[in-house]
Image (cartoon, rainbow, N blue to C red; front, side, top):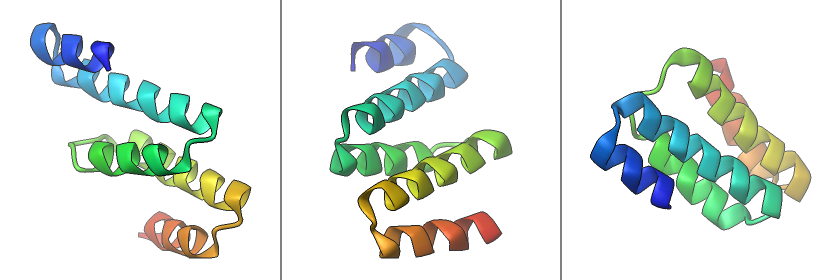
Length: 82
């Protein structure tokens, strides 16, 4: 959280996005599905380059497979096709 606030106040937009990505990866690693998905939605709302946008889709897909959440898997595949 501190890293995001610091990036907003002192750094540029790309550093803020990277801080959000770090937070997503943290929640994925500790297994907090709800917070990870919430952070993914926040990050997807920002301007993200195509490669990072695909990373977001793949992280969502990865969580869907881990938790056997077939609705999440289906939505992620549809996003990946777009």
